[in-house]
Image (cartoon, rainbow, N blue to C red; front, side):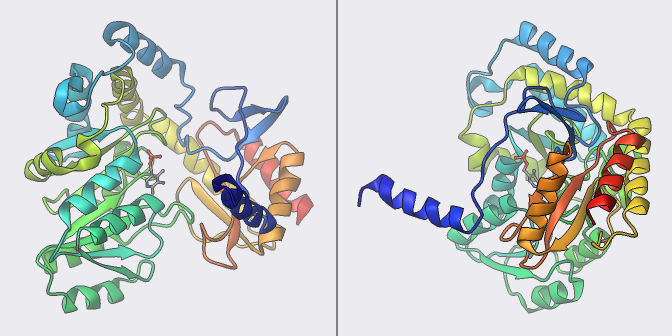
Length: 388
Ligand SMILES: *Cc1c(COP(=O)(O)O)cnc(C)c1O
């Protein structure tokens, strides 16, 4: 068997299980309408929660930034790739989140890989929620390869976490959690997790990919939603490609913790800094987020409209106050059929199946945005009712 033959065999197995992945090519910018295969699809698939990805003001900031600062950064941040727009963005993110210091990354995946494996090695322990995002799971595996003891606790089970922490003799302990779980839209019990972190002298690593820009006063995120203070034991990761509409991520924390990451995190050190124009667009985005109460009101009105609309459907919509609204269908094929039926009616709602979610909980992951109109929500609800 040739190398390619081996891969083909495995790909055939994936296809036979109905799990082949493919991409759809969009002939339009990210927005409420996506042009795909010559059709106009109403888009419930993107994480562009505030509708900023296609915003002309941000595009202009990026274009002006490129004209002023060039197309690329030319090197990693620690070499010669850290330009004034990068520095200004970090300072503005620190002021916005209330943490002493931040560090920016090209993607959230890289930001997550920077935190857990850098803070946890031999003699340390990581306690991770079972439903954490894949990037946090990979970060946990790297920490494990560095010699850390890693344990996963049942989803949002504060009691189980407390027992694990109480039994641990590790030098450094890290509690690692999504703030808004990406497949369910539910929130981590951050006040209880912070209390445990304080009681057991642990770090609390929070992935706020879906809370940043959306939750809390001015869209400051999940900590603001819970009225939690910043704390030197918190490391907060936020992505900048979702509500912020551009791309990249940041980690916020104490000045010491951030300096430590800057000195030691491999996914920070060994990669080229994002183009400075991206930082220029993000500075504009931060302004839009801070002044974006009207956008958030529109988003939450859409959430309420969807939730009341689907209340009578045969599928369950678990509690979620966020832009992520999972409609649990259960059966894999039934979920695919439903997504396909919506697609054929011009509605793009992704089907999510195991292993991304637990067996028997295949679902439609409805992503809402401030860009959706009430009519868009009504159209989705009416079509779901017709298909029910
Ligand atoms: C999207 C996401 C990430 C990764 O962020 P990128 O910027 O897309 O790499 C990390 N964590 C969670 C929970 C996410 O949803």
